[in-house]
Image 1 (tube, rainbow, N blue to C red):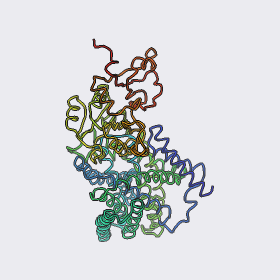
Image 2: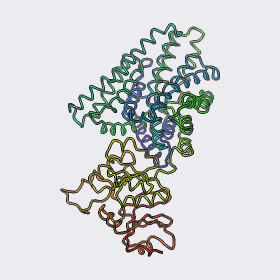
Image 3: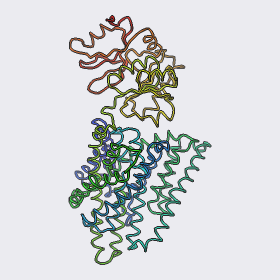
Image 4: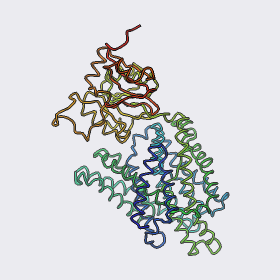
Length: 616
């Protein structure tokens, strides 16, 4: 197989796995791992076959993987806002410190006494398996859609512990080579100091420099995304040259610093990075899972199953429950969910691959003595397959169990079909009230105090906020909400709101009212590329909806049956506006060109006063 064919297969399989995961509502990582492993087994080809191997740990593949992981961590850092820490800062701090220490200690002890590993290798794996990471957390959060608080905790933990785990692995390796902690003490202190200087202080200074360049418009808009990519690559590589694995810390801090400065917007850069992240995750999981042979998995299978069972049933739950003991910021249900969500990802695989080679090389030089060196060398060769089994196992278990568990604990909605209304005018309140009474979640946003107050008096969930504000995008709890109805009287605001929420709901989930002028002159109408889909049958304007409700029109729910089908419905209410339908696919707004609605569908309709049945 030629390199071109192999690389094409990686890209095609990666995109296919992502699409199938979306289509059938499955965790994408499961399909990526399966496709990658199948590609390696059936083709008999691995990415290593096309690479000129460097000496020792300087494999070009591992270097490329490290750089791609750095880009993912930087993108993850760009999503971390300090405003999220108001509600969940203490739990995040405990999970990233106390829980990491407990997980490291428990895993190390288990591997030494239950699996028979040398304590140095056991401690290395104990460090590495403290990480989770955005490569697996982000797709799972998108699949589960938990509450904003839980999503914030899981996201922060997943991104922050990655560099922590890698740094701990570096320190453990230094102790292992030195022979004991006392001998390595001076080198450890120096390494910690260098990592802090490079990874924190250096990253903050670099972030300030980038901020100044962007604020003074010294980098053109079209170059900013790739400029940041170059900065990330430079920061990662430069930090690693100064101190091994300090690069992950540097890029994470760099991302967090840029996300929380206020002088320039990095939103457009974040959108570019989000698209790039999907591509990188797809490629990485396909490539790395394809490197593992069936014989390697068989050799580590038994140990892997025992270690997986320990991590899922004992290690992670104990670490979370003990670290969050007496925590007033988390409920028992939230702790339970966190205790059973710790999938491992690319960082674990990449760091393991690097240090497995380091240990093998050290053992080959007799660094551990004549008796221990052959044993450690043999055990080192098992580590990559062992960690791959843990990655597959944790992604499989948590990927399948996380969503049902979150719903059972009341931390995720059973269906994600609620409606976010931009605007709380009378017509929107009338529609939202019927949906709310029928058991659907609705949330109304408006800057008008009277509109919001009126909505709350009807028992509706409403907030006084601008749909275009950072608050609306970053701090609203959208658990259970799957679509935006942009229904303000301002057409430009509706279009802008729809564009801002595409990343949250997808293009299929953002809707806006049609403008008052149906055709619209090309000089005055909003450009097609910044409009979303128009709402409701016959494309009613805000003015028309407001007029119908003000004149006494009402919302009505009807279920279509064999006797009262769509044709009969339209004969009964010829001037009605069909706004929403609900069937086996859930609740959703109606497209203007709706066509025929099938029997069994619930139809939510705004009916003019003169077509309403007489009051009894």
